Image (tube, rainbow, N blue to C red; front, side, top):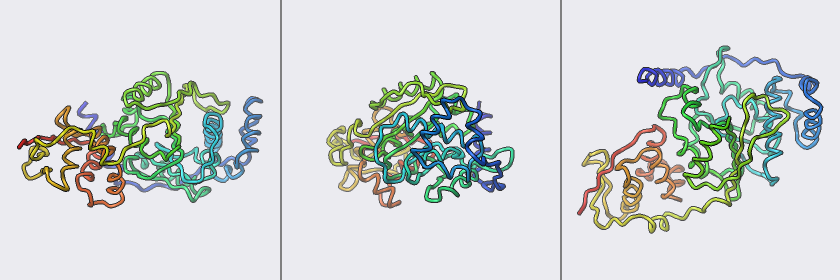
Amino acid sequence: MRAMKLKSEFNWKLKSLLTFSLPVFKRKIRHPQQILKSLPKAASDRFGYLGLRYNTHIWTRVCSKSEFRESLYVLDILDRYLPRSEIRTRCLDIGSRKWSYLPGLCSYTQTPWDGVEIDAYQRYITLDTRRAHAEYMLTAYPDSRYISGSVLKLSGSYPLITWFLPYISEESFDASHLPERYFQPETLLRHALSLLAPKGRMIILNQGEKERDLQQAMFDKLGVTVQALGKIASEFTPYKKDRYGWLIEKEAQTAMNNFSDNLKTLPAIEHIERLELNGNADDIIENKPGKAGSLTVYHAVSQATGNIGAEEAQRALELFAEHTEDARANPGKHPNIDRLFKLIEDGNSISVSVIEK
């Protein structure tokens, strides 16, 4: 097990250094008929409907046969399962991989998209990378952006978020060969929900019944109100395993209070002189004006275990409310919040010791 962890870390560092890519070469589809003639009549009829309703005519500029079909699949499920609403601003796709389905996303919303992928420099046998493939797709949609890194680094507000096949099980995560510290499904979901705009929607797809059940259990644990879409149906599916979907609507979630309101709900700190972090008497948070709020939050989230890891850090960021966004926009202004960002990013933890008066 230790050898596997070391190998994952070594490969990850190597990919982070070797980000170059050979050019992407693909056999682009010349006309949709190349795909449609091999599909059943129901699928051809469905494409006729989608082609009339959405702008699909530029797909042939960037799509191979398989990418065209995958974009059809994504466009089809968004059209089938998302309530119709006008979208005017940039949307977010989490876990974009090589973003082969970007045409389907852009056709559905007619707006730019942000795509975020933590393993953007995964290399194929052809020596090109996921990022290189995504940038090829962006030649047809130049206002969209492909972001290399974790979704935890993103801030902002999105009216629509898509998340296809999140790493919800250890088995699926192990297959990615990412370092173990990046397996933090609850933290990622909490942060993704924080990125939803008022009245925004998030659609999540899982693979197979096991991951569906794990996803449901996580929603229940976090108290997330969600609509189960059941087994996802599409005439264009290129996949052998069943997909199951979920729809989350922002108005169904509890609105976050501001920082002052949140502090009123947390345990009292009158008896505390300071908190020591990692047993270091020089790394402290004192109970004094300007620091008492941070002390209250750190104390509250660490009470159960005496530590703050990624999950506790995400909860703390929620409690800091409006100050969290200010910290993202102004690095260095809120060091006690910056520390939480770093814990989540690195997957580390710190111990918290209470020093009473």
